[in-house]
Length: 334
Image (cartoon, rainbow, N blue to C red; front, side, top):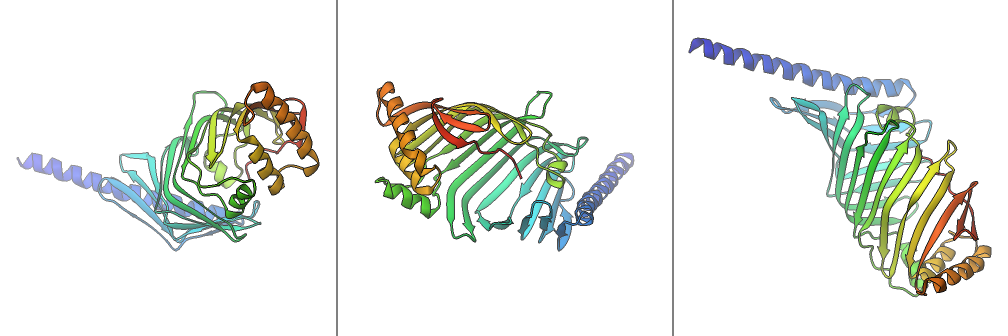
């Protein structure tokens, strides 16, 4: 019996030593990361770093983190962020954000409040913590900008999983429920003669190949840039308006897309009016676009709904291959 007790005591002491070593290593890694960012001229501040959860967890809380990238001018701050993991499975992290956080850009500062926001991340610790799969879920999300706009959503889920492709490629799914867009968009819809209401579920399902993996370099150095987008399905409804899209795009090193996306628009005339009112399309082109869409709608036999290809070629966009829309937007992640 005494040998059994001795073995149990030795195991307990060994596990306790492992936990203390792991907790210290975790805190040291976080502190070193902040120190490295500060050495690169970032703003990288925190009030404290503490790890709890003995004996089976490493629950690390970073109090009052502040980060600002001098190259992009993007800054983030919050009351805290928590990184939670099982002590025997440290590559599976749970991130927990506070009810309020702030994201600042050179143009505006956005405050985001949520009743719950957390993410599950499985990473490869031998490859700069490269994400293998992640799911981020939020509830009761509200955004408020210093440019005087607000938007809300009752729920959000973002899922990303790395595929087996040689190039860093990820299956990405995003869903938003009961979205209320900024008031100025609602006013534009009302001016188009429609009841704006709230969005139903907005969904995106895509596979995206990037020029680099999503790992620590994506935060420390530069964001991976999309090089091929396979948009399998996307849908958004707003009151009487509904828009669906699918297609494939190649994106060059300058962010210029090439390819085709098929768009199905319900109540497209109201959408066109909203686009004109918002300045999203050149008023000089609006008549030409409307004439072309009218022709396509009549050919399809449904005046309120159209299926039309949106082509991207040589840095330009065109509807149905015949209605020019001007320069294509650049797809660049800052």
